[in-house]
Image (cartoon, rainbow, N blue to C red; front, side, top):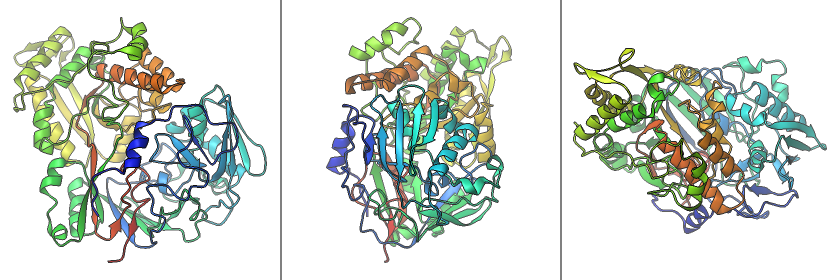
Length: 602
């Protein structure tokens, strides 16, 4: 099966963020951030799932790195990222064909109060854990309180804005918020629910490989070897196999995750057949390296899966906690020295477009040129403090495509000199001596290594000495979480319904707390104001204007040296693996592979 176009319905839904009146304060089968869910109470399955998909078979994925924990809900240790989504369930589940709509999963209904100050969930009577015990209100309350106070930092910020949680019946629980926030009420429905009894005799924060999670999800951990593989088996007694949200999903019997030291070893495992599916991020490799014998024999098929997600931001993040990068002119110099056109041609054959702003590739992206209308109004109070480009328009530099990039290097030197640095005998020098810094990378990506090598050589022509530190996934995570780097490679994935998570990515408080995702460390009142505006928008126009204004401030702050992005996902997979023709607007995203894939006997 090969597909390269969206179903028409998906395209129409994508362009309508549905910013209308709030849902009524009555129990609902689902809830939308704005307006009503696209699927009625009588829906039979998600539009991108095949309700007739057969059960059975296996899918084997390749992962670079290792793991030393099976608990994805704490900061300690390194956990296979899929466990968070495949072995735990939440009260509500996302539809990846709608910008931000949630449907009942462990909960049969959700009721957000008219004033958006509280939300009530009613558990399904049949919901149970993999050991056969029921999912109870006590499990829900314990999970929320434990994750919110002891869990990974991604849970802490939202919980700090919760006033209380209480049982309001045998199967219902109510969460009261400190202030009206419809999105936060919805986010509560996405928290994983753990079995409280499992942790009565186990230390939650110290769990590693000795505690196998008891799951309420379709899969359980059947076998593993530290750092080498994890095997998930479909639970034949899974309680929710026939509820509408799950019908046609999670039908593959075994999901096996194999771990490799680097991307080369992982690719070799795929070409030889040990791994059965692989995503290819390099357009050049996709064009040149996927004609190996198994492809020629029809054992492997290739698919390009489009999406309408924002590009997000991928690239080298400059840590403004380092005085060197506190000056925006230095940050702009780093961008000027990055020869995107040459790098893109070398690594991707010039195919993939550049990220022009965090929300590029989506209806939420800033418009080119000067800010107009409501966007200009939102930015006006901050005009005196905004950096060049925020209001009049910011455009990334374009080189002539040659390796030398003389214009970009010259401009970078000019900017460094304007910031108080000088070139002495070919060495960029400042008040504290020669300019040097380190780039922190995670081992395993030959593509990123190639980009970094070209970039380091370019910075040498500016007179800047750069070292590169490559560490394994556990060390990378540890240093990232305490902001121990000068420059770091990172990727923020952004949704079509940006909301509270934007504070964790760009907000002032997140830059002060360990484990946050404000890796650049900036604190900008305009960013805070735009996030406030989008969270409190009452109309489609104002919401989009707020996001577009935020987009302008973020790119003009020059926190990141942007890379390319893929407006499509490139997936190679064994011919016995299948997926529906209908592609959700999010495309190849969490909840698509392996969730709606199946194995067809050949």
